[in-house]
Length: 284
Image 1: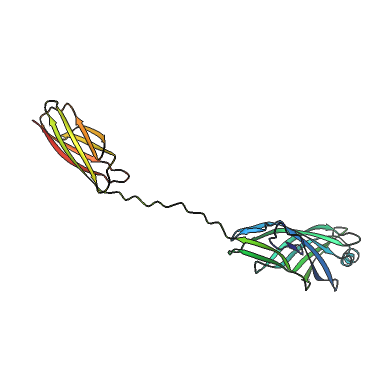
Image 2: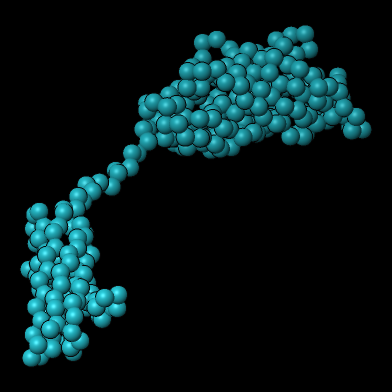
């Protein structure tokens, strides 16, 4: 809302323009000004959020003051600034506006427009908050026909008593709290033990390694890697899937005499830890 050419704060979109009267000392006498105001601020705001918009007003100056400006002072236009004291959301707040170059008519009332941005922060607590008008001051510069200027002339205006100073209300709502995603408890992997037995069949020249993987709870799944070595030489590695915790790896064409070492490694799974085992077999 704009009063005295100054922004008064957030006004609901459905609100009508407010009209207030002020007494202003001009030319050695008290004069009455009338002000009509509105704004483009929203009618609701989230707690703690920024409010912004445009405010506009019309200051209506009576024919007596207009005649003094036009005739005695030779003004053909006016311009200037204004500042208003308000109570917004329970706290004092001052706002500024600009009065553009406005022609002074030869007769009748003088209507001076004023405009300025409105910016404030919504209170932190949800509720309905009042915005009330206060006194205002203005600095007016008179522009003569030859474009020479008089001023600025400072005028302090007092809100007339007995008026409803409530400009409007702003409904402040609590911010929406996002629902956090459900938390998934971390999976605690269980320990496993791996055992292996190797058997060599001379007739087929095959070594068979049987693997058993047990877990503290449940049946392990995944793969085991079975590696056969003779001395430092790696013969072969076979990877086999576990089935019901068991696996079998077969190594063919093993004929060289000697002792063979077997290393078994269980890689673990999403629910089980890895484990390993060793065994041997001999080819005579």
